[in-house]
Amino acid sequence: MARNYVELKVEESIATLTINRQEALNALNRTVLEELKEVINNIAADDQVKALIITGAGSKSFVAGADIAAMKDMTPLEAKEFSFLGHRVFAAIEKLPIPVIAAINGFALGGGCELALACDIRIAASTARLGQPEVKLGIIPGFGGTQRLARIVGKGIASELIFSGEMIDAERALAIGLVNAVVPPEKLMEEAQKLAQKIIANGPVALRYAKAAIHNGLQMTLEQGCQYEVELFTDCFTTEDQDIGMAAFLSKQKPVFKGV
Ligand code: DAK
Image (cartoon, rainbow, N blue to C red; front, side, top):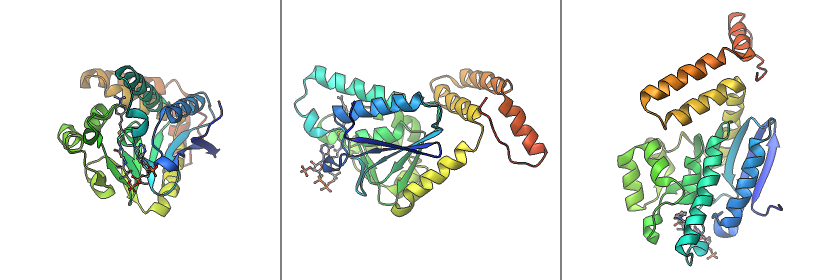
């Protein structure tokens, strides 16, 4: 499928996916979502990619939401299908076995904020603005915002943001734990890359298990989650990387992991 709105480049095992539909502040219509789905599926199948950074083209917007013009005249059935498509794409991002970093370069509103919420880590430019303004349009978040936002920032803050529909700046997003860090706009991609490099220097299998433990564990009770952690922890001891990592520590050397 020819792609018009989603760009992908891979450098030193780190993929950078850029949503580029600047005429609509990178808003998500069906075509953008279909292209995203294809690229995410390709990344999932590519063993050479060890981390993914998702960002928006230009300096103004990460993603300004689902495309309002495209949604305006949708029938309920079309709205449901559009919502399912978004859910499938965002779930695919969340389930990628590699760490995913959102580099939020500007507006992350509605579906854009929800896209960032589906990533593991969020870094924001100091100029970024985030929010779930759907109620201002007479709808509610439709790509997982009511669920993921509450899990990340808690019920009270999520309720405030979703009920008010107001945008918040990057500093407030940092204060409530919606983003992990705020950096100057010109340093955003560099900082995201640096973090990705730091992460992928660690054991690949351990990273995969850690992500599974955090993500899947959040769907379980604490007791079930801890049991799941025990199983994954035990599985680490079936890998060469466990031996490599511990031997390197004890001999005061840098580990060179094999990913097995
Ligand atoms: N959709 C379509 N076009 C958009 C857009 C969007 N979300 N956001 C911006 N644009 C377009 C504008 O219409 C404008 O187009 P032209 O007039 O130039 O043709 C262009 O981008 C530049 O935008 P502005 O002229 O408005 O730029 P400003 O700097 O003045 O304002 C802004 C920037 C981000 C504050 C403003 O554009 C804005 O408020 N945008 C809308 C933000 C928003 O409300 N986002 C949430 C969208 S709702 C569901 C599925 C999904 C969802 C819900 C339910 N189901 C199916 C159940 C998710 C919903 C959403 O995400």
